[in-house]
Image (cartoon, helix red, strand yellow):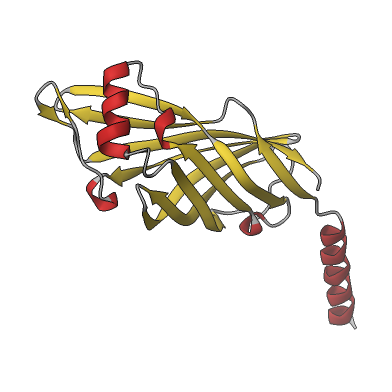
Amino acid sequence: MRNLRTAVLVGLAALTAWGFAERYAGTLAPTSRVVYDASAGSEVWRGVAPARMSRFTLDDTRLATASLQILVAADAFDSGNYFRDRNARIVTFESETFPDIVFDAVTVTPAAEGDLPPDAVRAATVSGRLTLHGVTRTVAVPIELVRSGDEVRVTGGFDVSLAAYGMRTPSVLFRTVDDGVRVSFELVVELARP
């Protein structure tokens, strides 16, 4: 009898939790951005571009079901140096041929808790397909999600080999840009119920 009572209580708790799940769509705040950090020898610089989002869904009780697609215009990166940015657009990104950089999330794996209630901070790994310079590769990116009410801040970063995406490394003052580039992002998602 005790086992039956326990099973009924667990079942009711699960149904109650499911009934209060909130499902959200989202839009990106204009402050959302993607950054690359590159170097050529001892010279280091940063390029910044605004991020766009074509898809976002979140069930706040099951973080693993989140869905997300981020786009960045390849010609939008600004390092503060016109000539370096122009060279990157023409030589490295070839942005006229490959105008968009796309990250399409396939799975979200929470580090611990599988939910994202208001005022929560969660670590997770998002795995997905990164399409850059016409080449698509699978990447796994550690992220942190911080929720404040109906806003979620998503930050993370990963390393990219330019050669792995068939990209040429330009020269800067007779030095070749290093193949490894650090990509990081800060996305601010404004939640809305669909």
